[in-house]
Length: 276
Ligand SMILES: C[S@@+](CC[C@H](N)C(=O)[O-])C[C@H]1O[C@@H](n2cnc3c(N)ncnc32)[C@H](O)[C@@H]1O
Image (cartoon, rainbow, N blue to C red; front, side, top):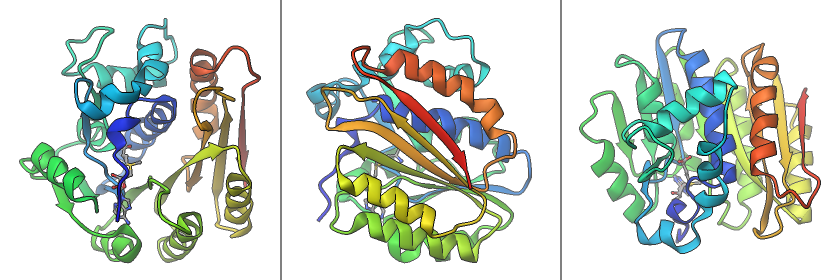
């Protein structure tokens, strides 16, 4: 049974890096039509700061709040922040944080398609309530591991697939590798963005090693070490399959800026950006 609720973590440093990259990819890739965004592990899509989950750990204070109060010049961070501010009175304090679903709805054009799958009962109910009125969005309570293949196949044209699991199930790292290997093989021209947490354990190291060893073609790996002393999560990382050719050039400065803002100043922090 699933127990993870993204509301406990929404807007934290990992979300900031993830959504910065997501907005960049959506804006780039949507130019080639038809375009579809598939969010296989969708969450609730919108997280209110006065919600009991958000109030518990207030992880956003070490994430989006710090970025919103910084002087940002990077145009790609600005693109992301502009979306966070929409509906939030356009100032430095926010009443809700937008998840991947809401960000995609704000970036994409009306004729683009959005598919959301979410397996947790309560998260699914909230997700439906938040988005069911939008005609270009399809929402299903489906297990991404069983159905992703059929879903990708259903949408024609150019696609971005976000794989953003909660890593709460036994063997989930292995399941992700299998899922990605299978689907990138079957859909070699689609773009995939895969998120993972950096924990201080062998698990993260082995996951990265095994993922790279799959020999998935056209792979980009971004590994961000924050050495944050308070959270179990010491960093965050992403695998991107079929990234736009100038992605490194476009996002490197933004990533470094975010790292400067979000890192714990008492520890060494670094970003490794590799392509395979
Ligand atoms: C990290 S959260 C998603 C956050 C969201 N993508 C965002 O960026 O705003 C992961 C979500 O995946 C859901 N989930 C876990 N296993 C799943 C599965 N097998 N199929 C579909 N959803 C699943 C969880 O219930 C949780 O809400």
